Structure formats: structure tokens, C-alpha cells
Length: 146
Image (cartoon, rainbow, N blue to C red; front, top):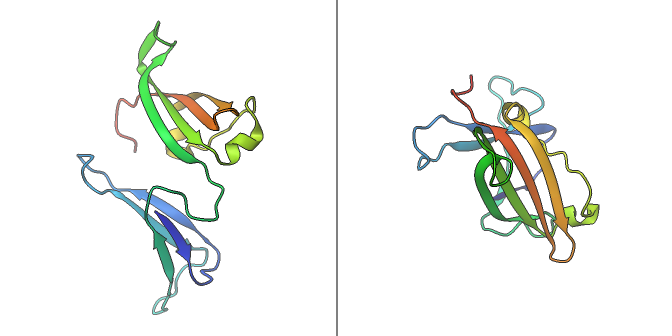
């Protein structure tokens, strides 16, 4: 989903919230606009927007599209896997990743909660096929984050 503001919302940021859930079937992700200035008691705030639904990126952007994801045991490929590690591969088609070249290093932002779990990361870009991939290995959590 893509949200397009129709008016000037002023300065602020989007906050993504994950609501704890026992099952993956529950809709437990929410996004909120947080204005830079706190709302005053009794004030009215209006935010007009348009929603785009679908698989394709919002028209007019040059965003890469995720075409595939994979996950498996962490550690050396097919030889010395480590049960405490998990490997993830995310593949992208087209977009700005192609313009940085096949050997460029990517520094993904995993966010504060995930940063402590991501331990190894590398990228690959195939200029002939237009497919880029990001591979990272993370430590498995043994308890819920606080």
C-alpha cells in the first residue's frame, strides 16, 4: 500500500507499530503519522490522503520491487549450518540498486530492534538480468524483546 498526502501535513514522521500477537493470521501492523509538534488539547488536525493498493510500486517512483524472498539455516552454505543463525535473501528487480553497480556495498538499515540481530550482510547485483539481491544472517532470538 502507498499513501499519498493530498495536503501539506507539515513536518513529522511515520511510526510503524507491531502489536504483539500469538498468530501470524492476525492483522497486527499499524502505521501512524506523528506530527513534529505535539497536538494541543482541543485542536483539530486534518490529514487528507489517497491510498494506492496493489503489488506494483506507486506510479512515478523508481523503487525496486521485491520479487523473491528466501530463508534457511545460517552459517556456511550447505556445510556447517548453525542452529542459532538464520539466513535471509531478498531479491529485487530493477530500481535504483542497478545504478550503484554489481560490486557496490549496501548498508541496509534494519532499525533499532533488528540491528542487534543482524550480524552479516552482503549484496549482489546482476546488471544483465536487472536482479539485485541482499543476503543477511541474523541471530535467532531466544526470548521476546523487551
